[in-house]
Image (cartoon, rainbow, N blue to C red; front, side):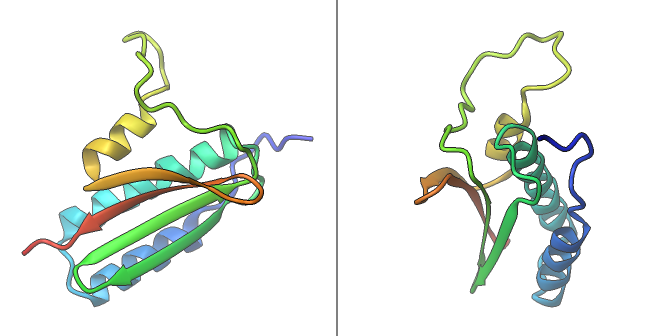
Length: 121
């Protein structure tokens, strides 16, 4: 069975905002991180079939890594051409444009899609 309403990502977004704000990150970078997280979260729900995607935030000195996991082994295809009239299909291209690094790791069951951002110098 598939849920028709996306899961609530508020807790993940607030935690992300809180740790980056407390660490002195710039508002524009925090916004980019929130938007990229939202894209990965919705993709894990919509395409990965996960009713509650797992989000892991890792903050190291000057580097943030966010990963979102689902149970689907199907890898994302960020380079597929998108019809300019389509209403969706650009999320991973957006993540790539907003972040410094982006990738996918296979897991025992499913995958994790991640991005990294560097703090502004």
